[in-house]
Image (cartoon, rainbow, N blue to C red; front, side, top):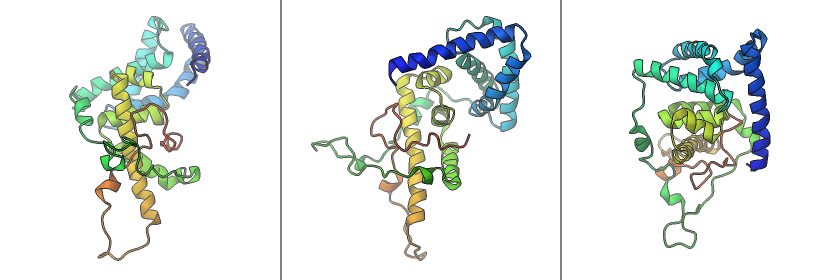
Length: 258
């Protein structure tokens, strides 16, 4: 994003945060109600990333709202109001997750990166003048195909099957629309780890979508003639050959049900 554009977007948010905090500190119940309506559902989804059930996530969100009200006078505006609020949500959810036995050890980052996100044979190998580039780029998909209810269900199920940190990163980035910086701050990970986790998560989601669309196009075969997808095909890509924060052309963003 152009730095000037980013600054223009950040400054109004900062002013709005300051005004909203001032209104709530003055006892403006309508301001607080508007904030709850705007953020509560997302807070519950955020909490679900750390706890074992929807019911637990709802309880975490309620606990977080109490913490937000109590701590509002200590908000100094060093970060956005949103980041500050969701930091409280994450802390409450992590504490609940530990009690529920759902905490993720520090070694999880290393474990999550142990496998290839994309099959190496989909790229030109060392020695080729095109080394590292796609041998066959991922197939583009039409927007109307991606927005079909059946497709959205495949995406949602693919995200739910992801392991802890990958699921958390792709949910925050592509479902909730968080920036890389906000995601790193909330999860306590580096920008490099965030890029890798997001790339791998998108790769897994795209692999499921490729299999889904291939199954719809493939002609019917007898049970005897049917063969499982090859390993090469199963290991698909998110559409970007490098671990980048840039949005791949066919990333599930804007198509994932909220």
